[in-house]
Length: 575
Image (cartoon, rainbow, N blue to C red):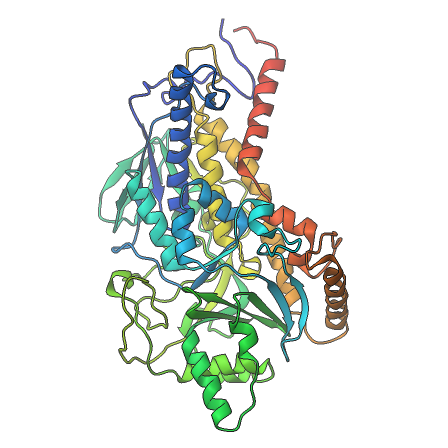
């Protein structure tokens, strides 16, 4: 009699019946933040299961040693990266608690804490004068009732330079024995039944076979096109971003010079005294600023409607254009633009971090909060804390970048053969208005690792041994709704923060001011729910819990229990 359990079967696939000594080969396309996270999670979770099983066999009375999988899989991972040199570019990136909690779980807390700055408040300001309309004051514990994000959600809020973020993950995957192959541009992927094994073809003629291929190749993903069976170019979002890194000392010197020349103090002290997230809401645009590199750098992001030619996604920024765009904004923002556009000396990126990429927007930067800095462009900031500052003179070039995303996909899994799956920007590229692009990629990688750890080797007919297609479907079912929600909410956030001056903007500002007054009574926490349509998103406890409180472990165990329960309830179907 053939035993079949409906949604959850004892797999007859070659993977599930393979000797556990023989590794399952996984190819990850793309060595960006998402691809690296997937590699770490897969190996971390399979090692956790192995350690639990070994512990349970020697200590049967240890409740904590209960194995979740008595025959955990043995994964061997190779990452194929298009870049000829492994490096990451960009400026600041935000790591919210839903991401930092996972990084802590992987044993990386000390490294991230060393390279990061922890903001204390999130302040939403009026564009013209910097008035605080609404804020969330509970990012850090203060001993006065604010427990802080780490205590509330299990992870801190970090600001870090993206080169440091990438470097930490690269170091970890190498410690885990992952091979990273550079200069590997994927042209095609063949899947069964068109070939015996999933096969990746490169432009140089090389081929790689694997049991599972993970497409983490970003916004302009070749893997996505193969899953869909058609071209799928990114969509223009209608905005462009300027990114600026300014030395904190340059701001101090600028302000002191202004005052010496008879100018008034415009209030930089408020922005620089303590690390915060400062967010200016303007008509048809916004600005966000925060500190980096032990508070020695000030990261400035300016987003406005795009004016790039149709066939150009990246172009140099005209200093006069920047000044004109922000001439009616907070004088401090005008000063930051002035400092950045007049700077003629800057600290240079060490050669070890200087990329040689012509594809950085699509591969290395596969999961981003903002587009990366273009290859070999001068930029402010000592990106390597172990490298002394350089005093080399250069012409500062600020670039403007078109913001792009993609439409929701019908599936993240290759058709006919469940050996190809997508994650990160390759399947849910989003806009930067909630600073969650990289966090969603880390969540994807984490959940994929948790799910793949459920694969049992050497299925003997007596236990649950799902096949790969069931596990990948579980991953998609868990991640697709959340990421699509996040994409929608990010788009909605743009409508809130880019609101033109007028009646709706006045209503928004009034609502935010009233909320701020209520929060002062509550100690700055905002514990009540804002309700449908509330504009101060981060100040709303309900929205905050949904955004930051996600726990992939709980979601996977819930889905797994559902599959097992359905198996137990279904009748055995005779052959």
